[in-house]
Image 1 (cartoon, each protein chain N blue to C red):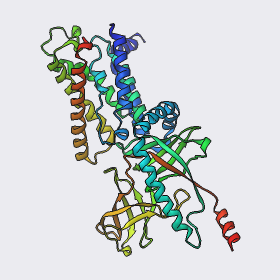
Image 2 (image 1 turned 120 degrees about the vertical axis):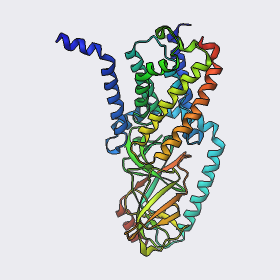
Image 3 (image 1 turned 135 degrees about the horizontal axis):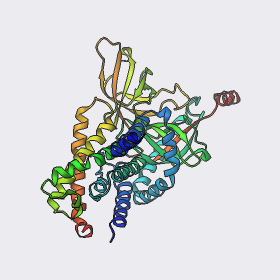
Image 4 (image 1 turned 180 degrees about the vertical axis):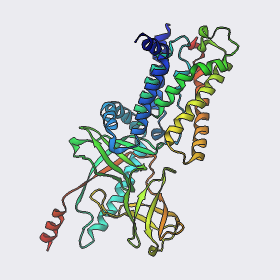
Length: 167
Length: 266
């Protein structure tokens, strides 16, 4: 299948799960995994930076729209989209030509490491903007750690489950 | 001009990042001010069909627990009605009517949380009406559309509600400090109140938003700040704000009506 239709299916599926299933109010839990971050992780590496930025903006805006969270997720997504080349260089430093790198086809170990980087940074900014002040640093750290952990676990589950379909 | 264009093209990504970051940051800060929540009203009007579909889907799955909740609420309300009917004058119960509504969206993570109701202007919901359940208050209507309404949650640091100690009628100001979603702060309660842990807190009724005597919670901690003559109380809420479904919008009818009714009774 072409990459773009595949990405659109990914986008709609993850957005549906995030909105219909992973809602704190519906599940009655304080934290839910933000698995939509997988969209940012699996964006093709050869897309122009401005396309990645606009895609990140659109993804974040959709999530903020669902959670009525102002621009918290949008801001975090924009930062991740802009800093994406740094994460790729950090994880895939031994790749000869990063432009030709196909993230979705790399080994699970490297992909997981890359996902952990992105999720940790993304969640840090989400909770910094949720807090919006220097108070309650303890809450920020515990929320960041807990939510990152459940997102990493849920993302690993999704990545393993969809391993065949991504290649 | 050519140089400027070249510079823009060279730094295009950075400029786009700054622009998009600025927009999203603005959305974040705007969300924290309910006086400027036109974006929320827009959001509610656009997403209402989606939220309603989601609500119906989950309501179906959770119908048993919702039924149990409604039965418990009805039982409680019936008890209240019987008690009130035995009083000589019903000053607190008459000037308010309630509009049943269901919550189709709720947030608890932010410092400034909002809810969305599936009832709007066509059901008589208007701005600045209170939203309650049988076991506490939920928030105040902030914006309305034809079919939905936006509500400032009690878990919104901007909202302050008049409340009092049930046993002594000493008033204070109730607000959420942004910590646990199941507890709030009642400040400015005079030391003469002699508060003890376990005292019940109810609404004060000093506004046309919430009726008096709606139970809110119990005092779980009482402290007096240094050099202060007032208590700062932590209140454990009766209402679980993370698990809301059926609520009632409070409609305040004119105070003149009650006077007329009392005259008629006399």
